[in-house]
Length: 167
Image (cartoon, rainbow, N blue to C red; front, side, top):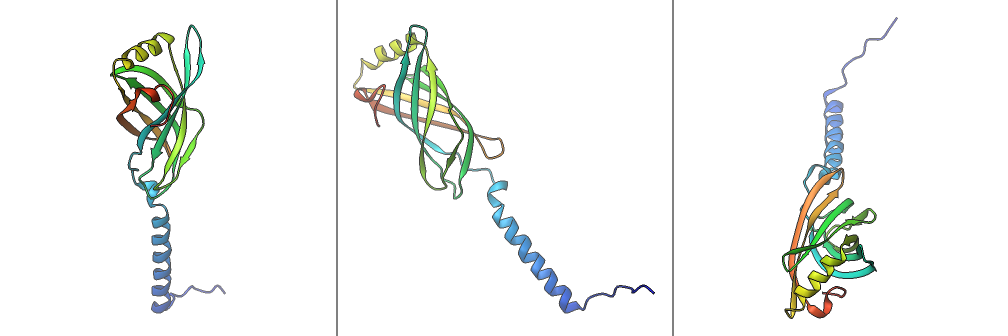
């Protein structure tokens, strides 16, 4: 003869619901960063280093200080950046390798960038007219599961810090 399941007592059922509810809330709290759109990072130009000069192209490593204002780490899978000097485009670059930006902290990341020797000469000529050089860094970071976060930063560097030095 088969036994017919009986309903658990109401007290056991209520306790089971509370435990499931608590477990579900804990799970959702742990996944909260996954459902939120992260606040875009702030970016500051730290340095521009020449890595190669040739008649046909110029290559640079651009170091950016990237502050993650979120309370959780951001995995940066890709990052495209553009640097303009005195309002004129100078170079385009990409993140060399994926990086993790610690939550609430500033991380330094390097961008491998290319341009033409003519663009470098024009930027140096424009920079020679002023004691400081205006720059604009713009781009997009691809974080977490493909979410795109735009960023932009403008500032000035002393001419002595251009093209390679700390801000």
